[in-house]
Length: 123
Image (tube, rainbow, N blue to C red; front, side, top):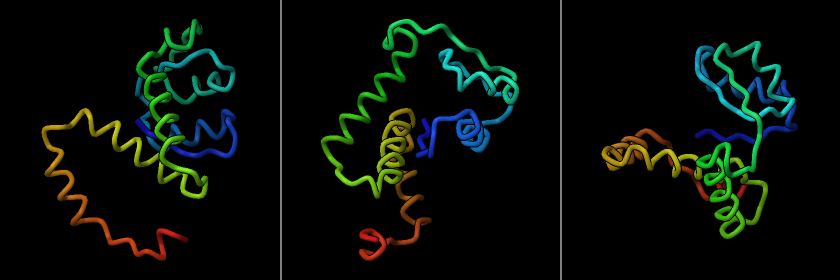
């Protein structure tokens, strides 16, 4: 799972974000929202599905979104650090699929990541 703040939910913004994280031959499946339609030109395996009830089309996605919203409301209060909160939640979500190497991954990230000072955190 990836997450990023975008200025507006336009085809151009979504396309720029998706092109930065996905290969052109990846399979994409989404609802028939009009802003997704231009993405068919960029991604050859793009499928749009007629929307039913929200929880029926993409149940895992809706579960992840609702979990993120609840976590965000309960823990964090300032929009200034929203991208950091999104990054943390995506990391936590993705980590659930790689539990066997989680400790090794943590050690590698700790060694390779420069320390963050208090001034950087509150800036």
